[in-house]
Length: 373
Image (cartoon, rainbow, N blue to C red; front, top):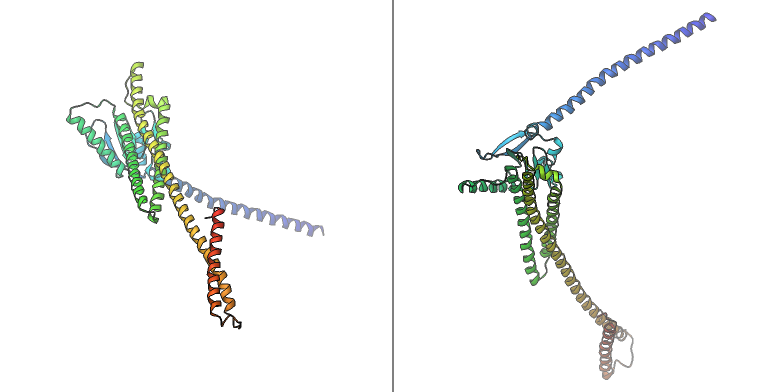
């Protein structure tokens, strides 16, 4: 008995050792399987990072020396970061590939760069500037304005008084303010045209045009306020004002103050323009809302007149219905002595007409006395 019990215990220990060995083997297999998958995830993450850095950007390069005309080139994200010495976080503020998610106005001043995103997206350095999205209408107008300014200065043999970086900032602000002013002028023309249409009558197309114009004005008001706040924030930051002159070589305090004053004057001028557009947009939007309310009041007055007419018709119908009750009584197939009398017919008809007219007049006076009509 002891021998058999000992043999059973040895057998159980052997089974346990076998199970442990199988478990260890399976664990090694799982680890071996998990290792390639983790490596694949690392490679996928690396490849995605490489693809983001190699994403192409179409830019226009503008040299400060003016020896070459602006020319278009394709740069990867890595090349763009190296050329401008920017961090990826700063580049995301003006990255056109982000679309509407990155349409917030921004003026970012760094040690060696100024980033402007005011509809025109441009990275400004002391010796050159990179214009992103060169095929948009605002970028084309920006290039035409800058080229015309340089051509005029060259023909007149004039030397640009502002440094290159401030010239680019001013050109960006000038194009942005011109765009806002054009949108305001377009909305003003639409408002005047709408007023002329309302003098002739109210139609469904008038309401649609009024709604679209209000939406355009709300967007313009929001956009001009955002640009105004961004310029004001830059003005309030003394470090940004001081560093905006990237090519500054001033060593004396007086020269630095003159440069800062020049930057402040430049920003304040376009701040006033944005404020003027914003104020005019607010006034026009308020007039549009007043016009919308006046249209609503006019339509309410018309609905009231229609309701009055409906009430008068209801009064007449009620009086006629009372007369119809009497005629229905005489129309029953029951004989009486009145059928053979001619005078009874005329007398009954006269009484019915008089009763209907009298009841209508009484109901009308009752409604007028209670200010219903």
